[in-house]
Length: 344
Image 1: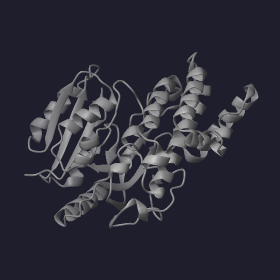
Image 2: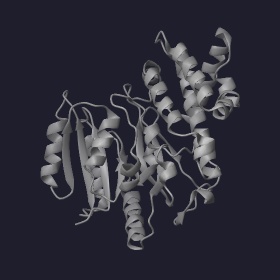
Image 3: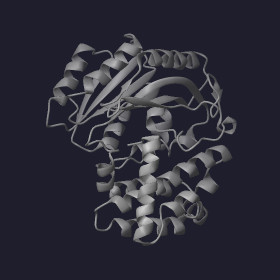
Image 4: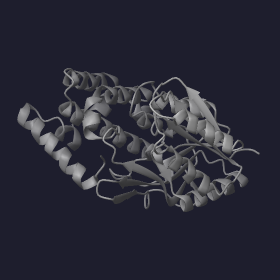
């Protein structure tokens, strides 16, 4: 049977939580044979992740594949899943996250219906939910009043995204050929590659479809999680690396056809530069500030207009205040925003 979608699950020492992730997809798909799950064991060695992956594949041989690779990091696992995907569409689900069963059933119905109608959708979008374990709260990110609901649309038909409505990996399900045809520059052994995945392929997508369901459940709470503040500060060099790759992918004001998409991508990049600015100040890496200064300088040389938008806008000014007092103000503003939005 042709597979309508491949769910890729990158796993690295994930034995404690990967079963929940996999089972949520199987339950939401209601045993349908037109879905595929590719479990990518990214060189796990501390637990029995590899064994669990093989056991799942043995239990559901027509649905689940287990792929093993030497450790290459999240981006490499995403690309390995892509190279092994048989589905018309491709969705990444991290092993400590899961999908809502009822929402997935509705999401799959929409994909099947549009494919039967030959709608040629390049990108499906659904809501995602931050599941905060520390205080047992949830924060839903949706795209109401920004994206047309329940029909195909183009970038010229979208509204304005606010700062909390970014199209993160959790929201996206690309047509597999969109990812393969243009490639996705995900570096090995680097965190935060999801920013590249959720940004670089967007201009290749011509027809989109938004379904207002809370599909992806994004777990927030483990101390070693990549979005933990201390972890992000310790990996600022990787954040800068990712931001530089994004910078070099486009001259946004020249390469992006639709003003609405260009506005979104510019604002997303502003956020990336803001993150680099804040966490360079929080980092204990000795060269963090120097690397930030070089990134700003390179952006200035690469795209002067984008540099002005990032550096001289409110967020650029507020997160790059001079003097040690200015740095303290920047960090205080970040901590205040974190309490309100709870993105860590």
